[in-house]
Length: 455
Image 1: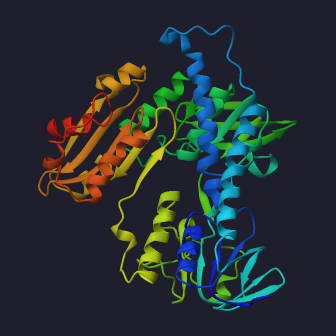
Image 2 (image 1 turned 90 degrees about the vertical axis):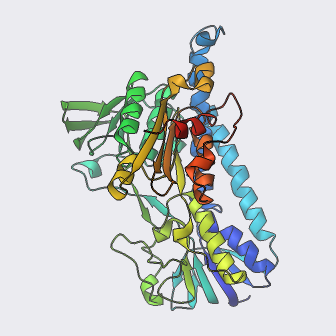
Image 3 (image 1 turned 180 degrees about the vertical axis):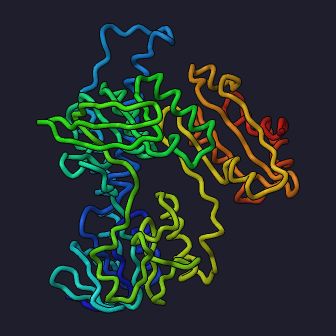
């Protein structure tokens, strides 16, 4: 049994498998260690399963709106949660199997299932086996953060992982956290048929976004029958099979008997039980591995990729971490994390597509900021689909002619935002973009119009 390898990869998230593929094709031997499921967060408990559930929730919602489109459906629309979960499980199984098959098919790569711990800067113990690597890459991801809230330890709580194992629709789901993960599950389960309450300690939902975006999301949540409490503190008490949730907010005090409580207040890295101190690898106060612009740790031959390095919290940034490391290690390039333009999406309905600075951030940093804005009620594609909730906006620096950022909250916003992302990445000045001739009818066609109507 081989004990010495050119490279060791720990963790099979989004960055690791692609890196293993490049390394083995370059003739390097790779030991690939994973203690849980191949594919990491995205494939098993993140993007793929959640968006599969979002699709089921959207189907239920659209069926209930069928009469708006002149379509008659007899009787009430019901959700079979067992079938919804089974569909999700199949999608996940196929994806996980695909990743594992890919890794096992790489010449020069040995998959090892077990818990890896450092014994020194080059030596790793996997359960009872010791292996050595000249270069080591960490792609170990993160997990849900459980906060210290009054009484929370006395009740059973759900995380973004465990909530997807439910086979029945909750009677009343209380979501603690009004940011991206919490909001997606809140709307999803409301559409499945649950009563849903969202509790957020900040003064508004998704507080990193501009106020009008937060307000719009709150508005369409409440229209769907979701109760939203912002600027709120919360405590818990177990009452039989239920959890008594006490909420104290600017809108007043309320007590809710919750059948289920989802905690979605953030993530933390899986760095606590790796023995990083034995390798001399530094972490910050929150446990994230400290890396430089090239994703190198303070130990020259150890790199950290993906969520565990605190330099990005998305599947696409993790994959870009792979691209940076591979390009620098194998292609003689000098790519940096700071060079990437990061976009992201909130997968509510309508979805929010975001890239670059918000208007608030831009006005703090630049002197001559202009903004183009349009409600979805004035976007033909949205009107045709009967989905006119939301808005689109773009932010520019009128001195440098840079496109600084954009937000598209509306149908296809998660796709339409890529036009702006690409222009920012290519450093195209906004006057050039505004004379593009996009396809009608689309949401994207209005982006050049926003640039013509800047104010």
